[in-house]
Image (tube, rainbow, N blue to C red; front, side, top):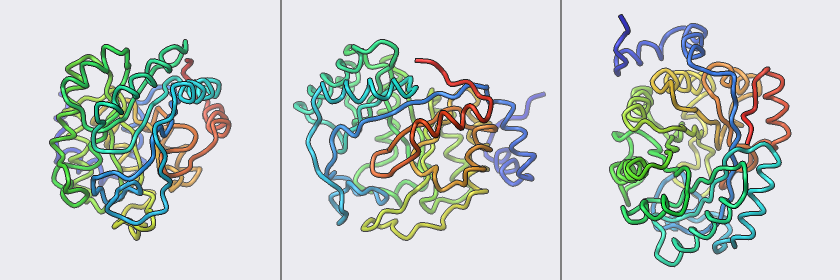
Length: 307
């Protein structure tokens, strides 16, 4: 009889011997690794007060502001990503929600990406209205990215200008209109072990296709600038394993902050829980080059999913 996956069960697993826990999670991992990439299509100050973010207008950071890129620039970036093995390419913008003018421009960027054979379009443009979700689907968007970031119980400690339910509502709209959903978290923002388990279960309820895992990279000038020791490498591995066990059909994806793991532990995660990589640079932090990631995939005997 299969054990019920609930909070008590996952907490018991979380606290097991690490090797035993990773052995369990590895049963749900395929031999495939999927690359995706993104372009930071508009950078700048955002009205929201998310305590981890360099782009919040509430904090004094050294972030560079620039307007939306052109469709040609988006297409060029997507083609370069495809040449490096990316199967998906995301248009990402700062801000809580796009206004009408920006939204129409984003649609042009998505259409430009969709002109490229062999790469699937993705967008991360904030909280959506129902009409915007409908129009994105009609424009041919394949996948929408919108993180819950942390557990519902911890969300007020991270942001107060919108709430966790606002994020959940957008996730529901994405699924309602038949787009794939990419929805994940940021670890190491001061959440408890219990709240990490809550995140795993909340994601299991949402049922995203992809779960991006970010690990906080504290940014000078933000309230979380000194949060360097809120999670260690062992607890990152434990959390990844729990996420995979609770969400066996979703692709866990290494995103921003994975460089906080040693090379050895990155490879261990790819063997036991992680099946996707956001390759190249991230929004406001840097990652590995695609060439380095391809080398790791080959070293592990994994198969890179083709465009």
